[in-house]
Image (cartoon, rainbow, N blue to C red; front, side, top):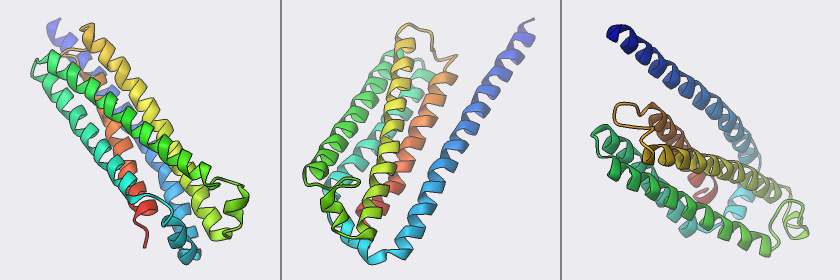
Length: 204
């Protein structure tokens, strides 16, 4: 009976992991399509894209990159801590990950607000006056970073649920597959930003 239960638990673990990897694959396809669209438009409007990129803050983009990379580290450490039986450390690290994610969103809000205040947003007269290429650049910027921001929000909600379940001991060192899956999702969110950062902020 013990062996049968172990086999069932192993199948559940494997199925859960495979399901998450399949979901992540669909997310990669989504952003991969957007990256392809970006590449085509950038090739067709190289000079205009470069000019538009000068309006973005490299400092803000770099800060957000560091924040997300750090949050990816704290999430990985949270999983490791739980696997080693240190529930308290895992809880603290999950909470730290959430705080870092919120800081990222606040920075992005400040950045977007600055652009909107300057009249740089889709269909704004100020932006349309700059020409077709720059309009395309900022259109893609708002769509891609906005979609990424929604994924950050979803990731924070997911980690918040994992944190609650860890506090309630519903996720433990011997049953942590849900936390691992949440970690995989968060790492994907970070990875997408690593591609977005150079495409928009470091364009040459």
